[in-house]
Length: 446
Image (cartoon, rainbow, N blue to C red; front, side, top):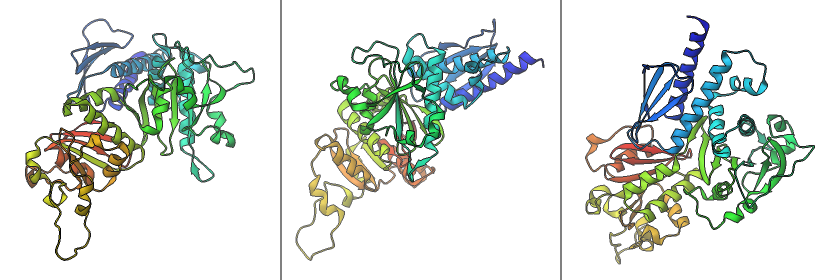
């Protein structure tokens, strides 16, 4: 095999790994492409749930069953294409340009994420220098995620000034002595406390220079009355709002060691447990809304689930399909509608003695913080499609019998699969993930 063919084979393997990494729920079939070998990754949608890719004489067909390929997915495919194409071209030529050689250093998935965010920040004209700036910011947060400061985990954030119109914020002042926001800064101990990521973030101008420390709430104040496209965790709703205009990007390292990336008013990525995840939150919220057939209830549960996940609190919400079958799903003592016995000898206090506090209430009657508190109690919060609260802290019995029980990796996951045979389930894991289950399967994970 000659050198170009060998290099192309290596880059096809790189493309295949990137597709599997960022689209784990999709199936990918690979075969020869009949026709001229296109040098750029060609992306051709085939309906809503399939895409054909062509590159260097090979055709890839991607399919998914749960939901459609979204604009964010197509942007991800373009970002992957930009990265593997740039690497393949450089591999065939001699170069000592550090900006190009960076494609061979670090982690491939980081470069893909930077390419995706570059498109978001720069519109239709992404630039190499902007991708390098994002690479640097990601590397700073990655390095700090591994360390501590005075025995506490490091938290910080960076606001990368965008290249799109924003009438509310002037272009940052160009300091002559500004230094680059890059990994070298992490060797300065005081830098680790220069921004906390929650209230304050570093402002990075378009060349990648650190020019200011700003209060993210002040920055987002001009957009305070504008609704977010998709709910964000309450602690980071302001960070999402700070990116509504101007193509600004916000990258945050949280107290949980998670990296969050915000663009266009939405959390678009998170880096958790060593894996980058494209959020696709708008599509997942749409699927969840459609399953429940109503926006207010779906949005309330979605938002509360995000806050529970951010606090690393587990929980389970079950919206039953048929309230008439509730007696088969939940034991009578757990149901809010079961009368509390009055009179007789004094018995030990039980959870059902508190049911009167929530009886005949709907989830929409409760403040989100109260619903979040109920979600933290061991067991499931059970309600119907009209938002009527039926039980909390409940053990859900399998409606189809023990033979239908599906074994999964943990008790809460098993409970989610079990409960999803009777309705729609949101499962919140203590590792920070929210999952939607229906008909015994996981539809999506966020």
